[in-house]
Amino acid sequence: MGLRLSLYFFIYRLIPLGYYVLRFYLSLLRVRVTGEEIALGCFTEYGRLIIAVWHQRFLPAMAYVTKFKNFKPIVMVSQSRDGELVARIADRLGLVAVRGSSSKGGTSALVKILKALKENPAVIHTVDGPTGPKGIVKPGLISMAQMSGAVIVPVIISAKKAWITRSWDRFLIPKPFSEVTIAWGQPLVVPRDLDPGRHEELRTEIERRLSEGYAEADLSLGWKHPL
Image 1 (cartoon, helix red, strand yellow):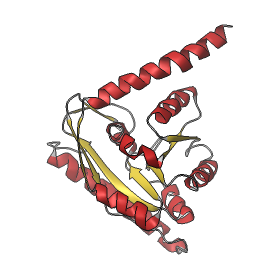
Image 2 (cartoon, helix red, strand yellow):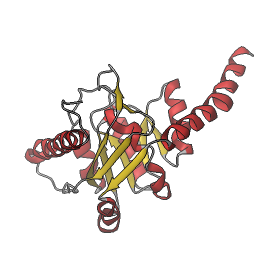
Image 3 (cartoon, one colour):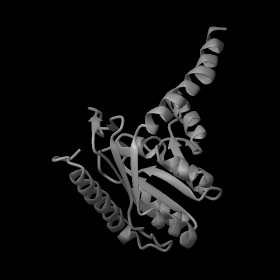
Image 4 (tube, one colour):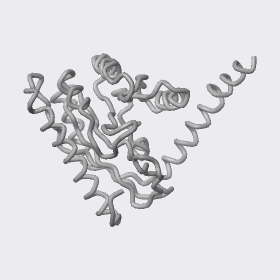
């Protein structure tokens, strides 16, 4: 009986509360987006895209993601109880949560994403998550693009004023009313017949684009050191 009451509270009380608190917080951010036409062009030209972001920065992106809810973007969410909360909130935001972990059973997680991409044209992928190391793109990104035919589009996210946590990724939480910038980068196409020798070359290329893009965005908003 106690377990049922606990689940009832978790599902019907905590999740809606978390969702509305999050939406209220996100509504306080002043979001400025550039390069959106790049993403829309990729949908038209390639049909599918992988939105590549650092794990550190996905929170402020949630203030913008609902604009693409008609595309039902996919997100990977852990299978833990905390993941259940995230998955249900993601569903309310118009996202499609695929349960799994790239750190545990990475091949299984990749298979789930590839299957979901047959139905949904976009996946939001935290390329250095969920456990790091920070700022290192994991090789699964290139495999995902090669096997799905999706184009990789780096997305650069920064905030003028933010709290930085002490977590492994130094997670960024924009302060209320802070200016947030979201910039779509140029797409990276991964050929289906990619030579195995070029796999690492493309992985380091997207890592370079993200690292340089984030550093430039942070500097433009007044951050004098790497976040």
